[in-house]
Image (cartoon, rainbow over all chains, first blue to last red; front, side):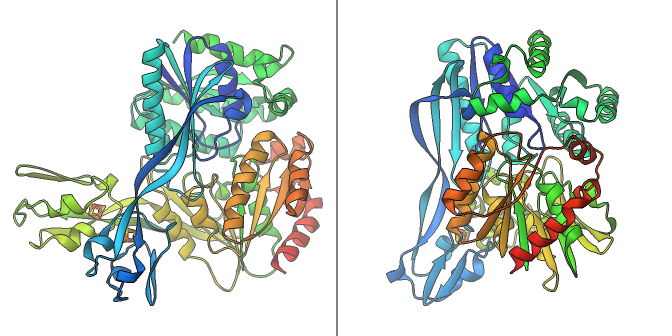
Length: 286
Length: 275
Ligand code: SF4
Ligand code: SF4
């Protein structure tokens, strides 16, 4: 079984549209959306939830008001400015990191720690195969734990169904969730666009992949919006020894398909779709 | 006055808009790039970065000669940053949240402060804009402490434009928490709408005033605008797709340089949201 993660660093490079299309082209696979903060893949794949489950991770502190004497010990101990005092201690749960230090030292044992329900995860059926996805609640810490968790679920599912590929829509950025989406994959396909910011963020993603010794490939979306920059990016990839698998042209059909809620490769006329088919041909043989 | 520019979804044009807002602001203005994972504001504003500070967090270092292997520090740490097997104690600084619990419980004085670098804070001037950004170290997992450090630089006397990170999780909430007004930049696609709804939900919870800028307004459908109308969220500006903007953006040019005609609109927008 092979695991491929599609990453972009910068948002808006067309990563999700690309993954939606690869989902349609690849056979016998499990799909995973690791963007648990702003998951969009489901908008293209129209999933029917087979199961919805709660995701709990870490704890949050809670004050039992009638035990609190208002001594303020916890206020001084909390490193996250999550506790304030007005007669009794008040905890701002968005700031609480769940370290439990306040509960440990409270002389009245007035602070309890409750398991934190921070999001939902789903296994769904789509036209293109099973999809494992999740939605973290707003303001929660995107620690990468939910990402690791749904990847584990996907792996189990793949073993059950005998799938030979796990296709992962990675998280944006370069922090915890991305690191979690990279763990134990076989290859990285980084999508970028020909702009200063696109290049800058691509470099950071490739650095990260190199940091974990992963094999990376690159594709340049909307390359014709600034061909010189596309060339610069290709040259810089060559220098790093990273192969550029393809260029996808700017194509308004991509947005039209998003609006219809279908992957762009479903459209026979689209030049972007043709490029994506070629990229997949190349990638599957690696 | 703090105006945060956020987007829910990445890549909607948040940075090209926030940088140009800073360029159009009357009077003293500061630009804080709070997208510490992918700071891109500097590409457009090209600041002269004259100061550079390492941003660190406190992590424990254990003095083995004083350690009695009692395991109290391991027990209090809820982040598995300390392990103990028989007489081997180890810390994992990258897992540490700097809660200082282990320092508090150690009765042997065996834990001393060490630090982990999470990134750098750079600042300087871009014309008359005071510019600050944080750059997270590659491989570092936690961005929020660096984001907080960037926000600490906020100048009370200036109009502060905050470029907020994408998404709606903890870094986004932290970035907008002190803002007086939040501008959400979106695009008229189902992705844009979906992520806009998530962002608005958070802002409503925090009772923040917000308005929307629809970028590439003609590459999509009318659902975003209709939804804004229903929710009574003002659409502050619509910017149509323009190959010139896409190309100029790609070269690192600012929106007001590519489209000087937008300047009065951005100025009016600042006035409107500061009122
Ligand atoms: S659990 Fe930790 S972060 Fe939460 S309120 Fe207590 S001391 Fe603060
Ligand atoms: S400071 Fe807190 S998180 Fe860090 S090692 Fe000590 S107990 Fe664990």
